[in-house]
Image (cartoon, rainbow, N blue to C red; front, side):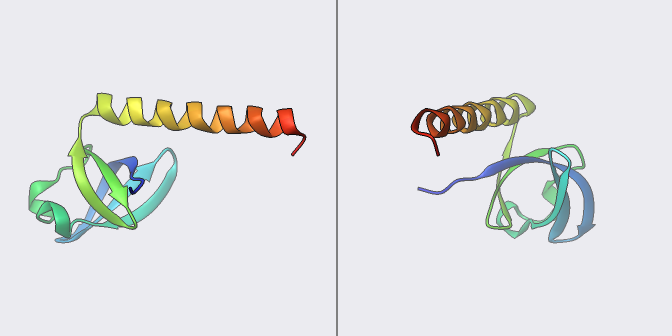
Length: 85
């Protein structure tokens, strides 16, 4: 199992690179697995795993994924508080 993080394409850098916005944190991401920049547009949402965009997703899918991560983080913090960590 792998974890992929949703982000939004903010800038096309080159044929195989784009800048992706992960909620205010910007990283350069490789687009080779999606066919390069000719297949991607600024504003598209993608799932990124270890620096590679692996899938184009809808804005709704990106939102739901971020919400799921937020719920997991909140549950983990609650657990840590309950065990005194």
